Every structure is written in C-alpha cells, then in structure tokens.
Amino acid sequence: MKKNFFSFVFALVVFFILSANVAGAADITLTYANFPPASTFPCVQMERWKTEVEKRTNGQVAIQTFPGGALLGAKNMFDGVKQGQADIGNLCMAYQPGVFPLTSVLEVPMGFSSATVASAVLYDLVEKFNPKEFSKVKVLAVFATAPSNIISTVPVRSLADIKGLELRGAGGASDVLRLLSAIDVNMPMSDTPEALQKGVVKGLLSSLEVLQDLNYAELCPYVTMLNAQVYPFAVIMNKDKWDSLPEDVKKVFDDLRREQSIWTGQYMDRHVDDALSWSKKQYNLEVLTMSEEDMATMSKLLAPMQEDWKQKADKADIDAEAVWTEVQALKTKYEATAP
Ligand code: DTR
Figure 1 (cartoon, rainbow, N blue to C red):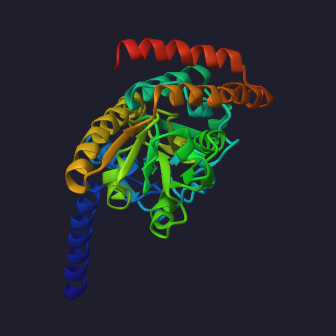
Figure 2 (cartoon, rainbow, N blue to C red):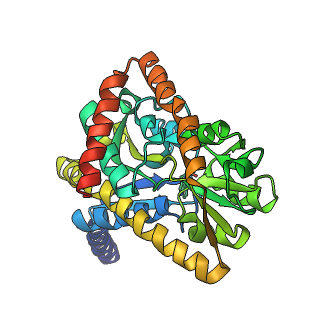
C-alpha cells in the first residue's frame, strides 16, 4: 500500500516536470519547404523569417525549415503546400508558366534597377489586386530577384554570340532567350548546377548572386550585362493551417509580410554586389557589355513580351491594362524613392 502511494507521488512529480518542459516548448510547429540549397537567397530569407517569427511569438511558434528540396521540390511547391505536405513553401512563379497570370507581369523585361524596387512593386501589386492565382493559399511574402544577366562558360559579347548558344532559363527568362535566338533550355535553378557541369548548357540567365551562392563563378568566367527580366517569388501557406492559427500569431505573420518582402529584395541587391566582387577576386570573372546598337536591337526583339503577357492575362479574366498601368506607376514611384 505504502509502495503504491510512493509510486503514485513519483508519477505525479514526473508528470509535473514533463508538463513544465512542454509548456516551455513551442505550442505550434510549422514546416517550411524550399527547393534550392541552403546557401541561396530563398533559403537565407526563409531562415531570417523563422528567426523573426520565433522571436516575435516568444517561442510560441517553431518553424522547421527544409532547404534543398528535402520536403518539396521546385515544381510541386504550390500543389504540395495547397495539399498540406508542407505548411509553408517558397515558390518561383517562373517555374510554372500559366499558373500565375497576374504576378508573371514582373517577368516582362521593363528595366528594373534592383530587386528592392521590383519586390516593393510586386508587394503593392499583390495587395491591390489580391490575385485569384493565390486564392487557395495565404501569401506570407512576395519578392523578386535582381534583373537577369548572362552567366556563361564562353564569352558573350554580342547578340550574334547569343544566337544558337544553349542557355538555361525559366518562364519569362526562357522567352527572352528564345527571342534572342539562343537555344533555350528550361529548368529550375535547382537542376542547373548539374546541367552546367555536364555541359548541357553553356550558361544561364539569372540574377548574379548565384555566382557565389552556387559557385557558378568556378565554371563560368563570364557575365554579360543585359539587365533583363526579374524572377518573381512567393512564400505561401496552407489555407487550413493559416485558419487554425490563433489571432496573435496571425498578426505576427501579417506584420512581417511587407517587411520580409523588402528585406529580401535588399538582401539580394547587397549580395549581388558582394558576389560580383568575390567572383572577380576569386576566379577573375570578366564582366562584358554589348554595344549600344545591340542593346537597342535587344529591346526591340523583347518588346512583344508585353503584348503577349497582356493577351494571356486577358484570357485569365484579368484587367491587363489596369495591372500594367499600376505596375508602371509603382515602378516610377519606387525607382524615385527606393524603400
Ligand atoms: N534567377 C531565377 C531565380 C533565382 C535566382 N537566384 C536563385 C537562387 C536559387 C533559386 C532560384 C534563384 C532562376 O534562375 O531560377
């Protein structure tokens, strides 16, 4: 009898110690999937968001991050999050042409000066138009890369050099490559290191921070400045999971939306500069430009992309003219007063 009593007291003490520990741990754990390696900007922004969320919720929320496609890959990110295979995911709109008819407007080359400006424009655009393409998910952040340039294993000094060259792109970048008569090889960034290594492609059209983050500078001694389109990204959350969150947690996420979007653009811009300096020092990277005449010809060759986007948007029941006008107004505003 006495022994039973002591066992009971002991069990009670263990129970209280364990409950105290559990109370100290997070109440809510959310999974966050990302497709490229941890060194790249989509994952850097993911870790920054995780840190901020855990801090601002005083540890009530824990974020478990999965870089490198460990939970969801580039092309099944959107569906995977909608179906709840991950609570949160980071996707690149260019990897699923036709699925994001409104926000793909950013994939039309329009001379953005930076990722910061493009990200601010994209954020305001999503706020204003609340695109139908995201109606089944909660949007936690949107941002864009810096404008794309050619990173290559062979020197590209002119439009003639681009002709017939196998270059990798996705979405709007693929259209750019096709219109410039390159051989467009379409794939997500996560498949590109292998394609470059095997010589399947001679280069890619991308923002330049990957020279360092994916060590492309080792294989590619040349960059050609085109200042072409940007790639839009979104961080999305499963709708049911979002609906299940307590109000105070929702507020933390909502308060972070614009801040995180702009933070990512600013991080990217700084990092493009750093990666260029690093690549020049480490691998003697050569930065090439094309003649003014070729740049003017390029603008003419790419001009149809605007009309093409409008036609596709119209078909998706979007007021393309209104969206286009708004994008241009926002671009003018933010180019003048970078956030
Ligand atoms: N440039 C796009 C998007 C992109 C730019 N940097 C990274 C790093 C990791 C993943 C994607 C991207 C692209 O070429 O896919």
